[in-house]
Length: 393
Ligand code: ATP
Ligand code: MG
Image 1: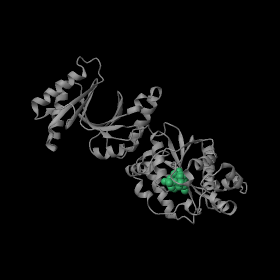
Image 2: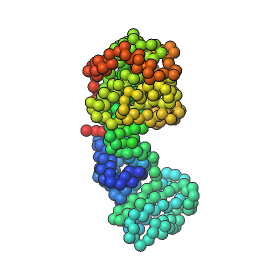
Image 3: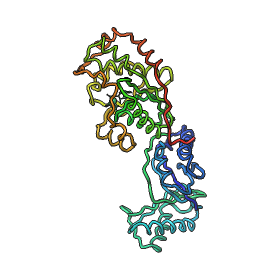
């Protein structure tokens, strides 16, 4: 009987033709995330992935929470598929569980993948249940038991466990194209990146600053946010672009109430141009309908008009409360609320335009040398490598 952690894959196992590619990707992700911790084989068997473990089980589980594609994990015992051996394992598990907890009721749940076995899953559960009743002071409760005993009954080897620990689900990293995330220092954009990475998009980052109006500490903060997102989404490149010159030009040549939206249109232009150069499939932002003046329907229309690329706004319909909950959960919140200035606040208009119209913006922008401004900004950008601190080399 060996200890292992079993990983359930949810929708991943439904993915038809791509299934094997997804599985390979997931297994390599698991290996990357625990490379520096002693463990045995990582393998796939009939719909689940397993890693053999000897020690540091909790640490390994915490690391694996950062691997998308896993729905839940269970510290498990692997046993030869033989009902007597399974009972022995059950004895070991129950001795331990009952020495640590005051459980009164239990239930056995068998999933039988070994279809030619003479007993069906109900019968196997019943046999094991009878064994528990005979040897332990526990009663059966099929509705709300204190202790669930799960048995994955498979040919050759079976797995027995009592806990299901939630992971994030989603699809393995990099199985769904590449996206460029517009990452500010706020609460929203790291959450937006996390949510899209969870669907298998590999990310790179684009950040705008207005140095020296914004400080180096503000950039450190954004890098740190990038590192946290990278602990889920893997290594990435961050393009750090100074927007100050563009902002000054807008400030000088365009109406004040259009300042924010014209700046945002430039952000989009730069994102579009980088996407063309580096073949990103999509641009990702943390925009959220109605959150601020620039994110009303009309505001979003004038920014969206810049590009024909897919623009993903995974937070568009969420409440701030829900966004904050995810930020806390994934560990970005504490960093996001550090009070450093943002490039957008440098030239904040007193009264942002409330019903912006595309024709007006385009007219105002005729006063600017758009192409040169965009090119200069890109030519002067800094390229920074961001983490993947969980992926050991
Ligand atoms: P957050 O800053 O967390 O995204 P926010 O409410 O401050 O939230 P805005 O500043 O209006 O939102 O920006 C909306 C979106 O535009 C951000 O989610 C981000 O994707 C992008 N964005 C804004 N400022 C920057 C920036 N300085 N660098 C890169 N992207 C930015
Ligand atoms: Mg912001």
